[in-house]
Length: 545
Image 1 (cartoon, one colour):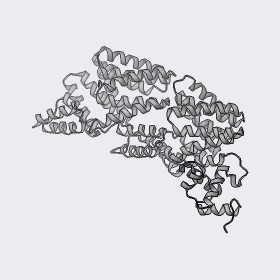
Image 2 (image 1 turned 30 degrees about the horizontal axis):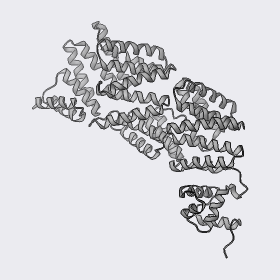
Image 3 (image 1 turned 60 degrees about the vertical axis):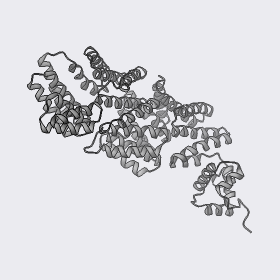
Image 4 (image 1 turned 135 degrees about the vertical axis):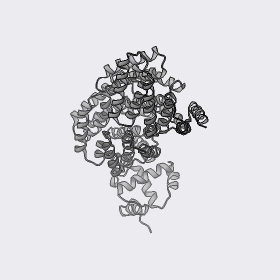
């Protein structure tokens, strides 16, 4: 019976049915204790099935058995994977202890084996932010050891580390090229499941760090498919939901982004709290902020901070949305002082320009825009290039250098549209509308503002819709109503439906609805009857007879 369970469990592992493999191998182990190699398979299955007590027990027992049999490499291998598991669980002290034990065993034995390369990885990963050059050299040595021993997993982990280190060294194009190469091996099924999941997550994080929107979309979809293809797989699903939420938020699918972020929060808190829950909470806060749900956003930003994630620039942007520009400027200023590396600053600088401009800190806003331009100048991230053009346009608009603003903002809109990031494109079009208005091009302003408003309305960006209403070109009509809005108001007062108004003015029913929404905002009313009463009271239509 035990033999049947063992054979079936090993077969299930080969077929990547990890939950089934775990149950069968655990059954075989209960019937007759497994040997060290089969215990390693049980530990791997337990890890992929999300059963922490079982993978700790199985790798620990395998470690002891290998040591008892004089297999130092096997003992070190089990110690390494125990450390790896504890790192991903956020238990760094236990992880460090197991890594140290593996290093001691190999040092005392004097063995030259692939595990010496694996044991270069933890310190290199931990030091990648503080000393990326040293990390790069360690990853290169690990890669060379993996190649020498024909260990595909170690080669992939080494190259992955090299790519991440190069990005931190300011060589994103070279780094991404290495990461793409690693993912080819992943896609071809050349790597073990744990390394596959780890590399997928690492590469997607790297793409997000440098705002490579298109690659992030592509590899997030691949990770999602990989998770779906492996029944019983528990790790990586929560992270996949976080990445998918970020992609959907950028792509304008805000409802789906919120669904994914909420699901990620739930999954990453079961059975214990995974470190990645902090990022899921931040993603959820971002959706709330953009939709104008400020209290919920504040709660989630602070929860993310409680789990160790710096909630910037989102929290500072939330203060700005609440019309608290001075505290927002102080907050983003502090974040910029702490984030002195290129990747941190690239995440903060677009928001810093917006906030510092709103707070009247023009010199600081110009300096932030200059730094953003320098970072975007390497051409590795079209998104940052567009953000830089938008920042330049906003500064020029504030200085009333309207022709310069117009050129910069048109470039920003074009790039954001090409990247399919509709919210950012609409924000740039809003500024473009303000620029056209300043140049006296009221028709051009209305065209840009209408396009921005259509996107904001579809997304549910309430605060941005109000800004569009305020940015409408100056008009002699009451309450700042535009000529088109006055036309719509007069027809409302005559009792026309949106469809009938659209037919009469030769515009779409959706555009009519947007004008009605703007009219309600400007008149501070909530019903068509109240809007009609305003029209009669202000003699915009003839009184009823």
